[in-house]
Each structure stands twice: as C-alpha cells, then as structure tokens.
Image 1: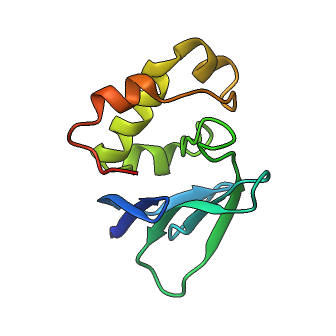
Image 2 (image 1 turned 90 degrees about the horizontal axis):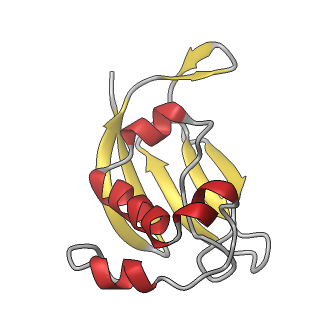
Image 3 (image 1 turned 120 degrees about the vertical axis):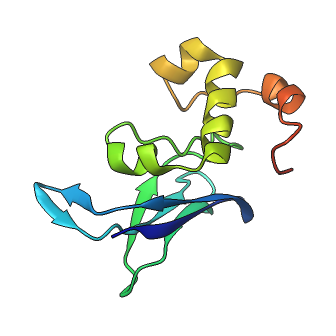
Length: 126
C-alpha cells in the first residue's frame, strides 16, 4: 500500500510523491506527517504531509533558512528521504552545492543562498 506525500516549505507546495509503510523501532507501520519547528523563531517552516487516517504528526526541531540551513534532510529517516519528491531533492542538492563543507560538517550554519538563487529557475519562489 502507498500513501500520498506532500512537501511544503514556507507554505509553498514543493512537490508530491508516494511512500509506503515505514519501520519505527523495528515495527512496520503507516507513515506519519512531519512538521519542522525552528527553535529560534518558533515557526513551523516546513511540513511533509501524508494522506493517512488517523493523522499523526512528528515534530522535528530544525533551524529554518533565516536561522540556519533550512534543510528538511533527516539522514536517520531513510524511508522518508527516499520517498521525497524530486523537487525537494533538488532543493537539498542546492543547499549542499552552495556550501558542501558546512552542509555535511555542520548543517545549521547561517549562510546566504547565492548559488541556490542562481540555479532555481524551475523551482518555486520562496
């Protein structure tokens, strides 16, 4: 069985894809939605919404683009990252491309989006 996944960043719809069952602590279960909370400004700046009933949300504390990288990447959550729509993967690539050393060594370093701004021609405006 698969479920629809919808990715939003700063209330902008980024893309859609499908996700199947996920493994949580060794148990196979339905996927749950994710909300990304910035501990600096208190905003829910990104959401990964899964069409499943009943609806359950996981809240992750990760810095938004104003206070850090603004990445939705969660290396420990392989099933969700594998299911991200291509548009979200493009954004993550641009973040890593912009400053690869800091992206992989310390993913919350504040920085500008100069390379991302130049390369996002087919991506939604933020």
